[in-house]
Length: 221
Length: 294
Image 1 (cartoon, rainbow over the protein chains, first blue to last red):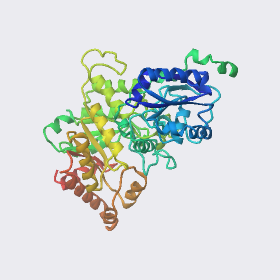
Image 2 (spheres, helix red, strand yellow; image 1 turned 90 degrees about the vertical axis):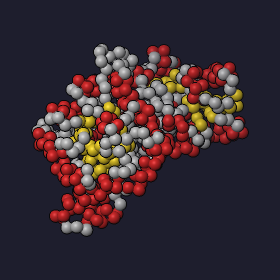
Image 3 (tube, rainbow over the protein chains, first blue to last red; image 1 turned 180 degrees about the vertical axis):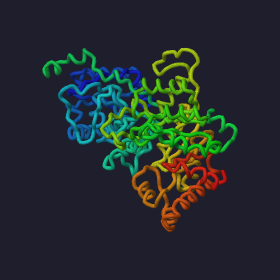
Image 4 (cartoon, chains in turn purple, green; image 1 turned 45 degrees about the vertical axis):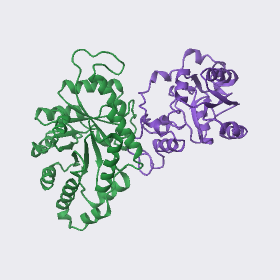
């Protein structure tokens, strides 16, 4: 069970910037329980975006957005609507956002912050990792997590220690910031790197008592 | 004295690196700097360089100050969270240190305590912003400092040999915006490549921020090959390795110093200063400077 909390709508609108046509993708797994994914969250977000003058090109609910195969199958059916969209707003945890970014060459925006992995974790695909930092940065980094992909969890760019694209800590491991750089280049968002990211708020990693009282949590204990 | 004053005067600034010892006998290292009095403008004291535990930068900087040698305190994000970093910055001001070089720091896994927790609560850009905030009389949480705020000249680092270079330049611009007043670079052996880097800096940042090219003495052909294989952004061209390998072992030191002096001469017109990382060859720095006409 991954605990997620909605990002403030102001932050979401700021990240969408001038993009007008937005596709909404919600998760019906853990995020549904946390009220960040699911049917209700999708409708609420559709209303919020329309209120802000955005065009919601389509919505899609997938049972587990962490399941790459499932996401690929479901998104294939939505290809026409996706092609008309400037970006995808993903209503789920950090794993789900990374999965979507992996399977489709579109700009993705996270709508939630992942604050805890709880007890039972979501499906853990090959590379995507989430440390539940509580302040999802995937929007800024093109869907590749700087907290888990960079050995130093740097937020403002590479340390300069990578050699031939590999991390100074492990020659077998790709430099996370090089992957982010290449991804941002590919989706035409290199200017994201110029923004200064503030230091992390580590207190965000503590899930609220409300969040810990979900039905899933009760069953686990 | 702040390093920024020297750049303002148009001086070609020379700094040297000092690595504190692993143990408490520090006099030897300090004594080796004596021949550089009046020749080097300031001395960078490393902060647990290569993630190897040793005497700290703050104490060593103060000892340099006591000898009337100008210290630059290196500050990395590897070992301290923001509470500790801000506290050490205030402590540095209390001890009369005026120059800070802010950097990310190597990962602990590269050093002699690979199991240590990598902290990195802040990154280098955020560290510069933290110092800047203290200089404006507020800590990172926005609390007011009592009395006069500290004042520092802030430095940062850049790797001109990084591939790709563009993210380095973007980050460099962020560091300038965050308050960096000068840059020291990773070791340079390819003058043409460095010239192209400086062109890019000029178009991205405007060439207003002084850059000091890094010089590392090549102690042997093996060291050059090791760096080529293992150190990010360093490439010693084959001609230089062959040049060093062609002389008999007893002439190696002389040849190495000659190569460094030649590089300094070639780089002098491209940048605003040089930063010498002698790695134990402190005793040879004065000779190289003389050979380079500085």
